[in-house]
Length: 494
Image (cartoon, rainbow, N blue to C red; front, side, top):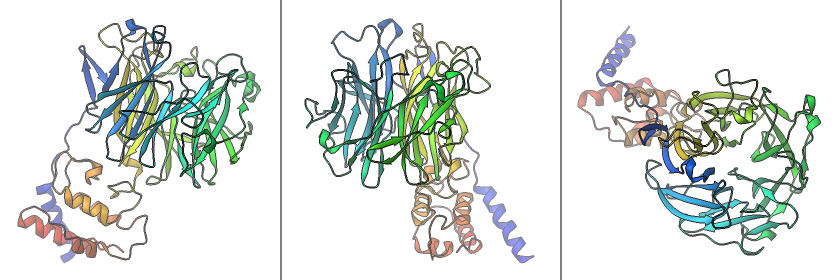
């Protein structure tokens, strides 16, 4: 009875300090009177005949964001070569400034050993090249030969890639790409390949990279000869500790979306079993980016999906790009739609959220999208020929252990420190230890952290001891100090 009265007293005091959750709408930009989803980084009107493609994003060691996109279309040969534009944000993506314009095409951005890199195929696609920046994307190296950035070169066929992910595994950094050595129609001409280099090597030197064989696809791999080709690959490590290539697959009108998993048993070899390695995947017929989250212990992707709301039996699924979604998988083979990030079903022929690239930032995912959307100037040329690059932020905290504020997969003193640093902060989110999503950091969040204390670790310190040893100064009136002390007595974990 005494314990029940004590708990009731604590609950009553909690009611005095809990505040209502603020209504936070999705981030949008008012552009020429049109509410565009996301933060507009770049715009190119359809009338220019210069369209935005291949968005990429990286997070610098100091926390700044760098994003890039290339320009394609009928009016992009005015300088004889395609262009890539690079942007920076110093305020977590809320505002962006143009940094530099380069001669390049369809590249990803990645940070490795404190430097920023861009790897892709330039105009003409006869080479696979890499550039390096040591000042956050303001200036870059210029590839001229095999020792300073030209990784592959062919006078016969070209190379294809996009803003696809890098993965570090077993002392090497891996990436996937394609060549078009088979000829033929899009996308059947592409062969899938992978490359890797020791993590301490000079990535600008072609001799540092080892390449696998290149695999051509076969229409007969799906009924009705409907395996139309593969492209835009993802290097990722599977549950068996093997590097694999999860790749986009093209199929016909009205067919279910597919992807494929190509295996890399060693540095030089790719293998594929069409009987086992073709998977159902929402968004699999468009370019997608897969990364593994140790904190969630899941593979995540952001993709342009087809569902019951936008399915069209008379339209190829790769031409339906008006729903952006977050998906997760435990094994790379079965995928679940976790949330719809943004959608607009008003005009599938003129609206697209596509080619998303993204990075983890704490418990958030930060995304750049090649977006075709109304702009007050007639809108995009079509869903594919985008007129915007937009930035989006979404939380994946629903997949994390409650109490894991820093998204490192553990609930420890580091998370308790974050909670203390933001105690009673309003307009907070998961990264500031608001675990129940009510917008304020308070006793309810402390209770959640205590309930999951030590998750993912072998801590031998109890939560009440950690609370006492943390030395956190909780800035609240005396009654709340009593409340926290009472909570400490109740939440005895491990």
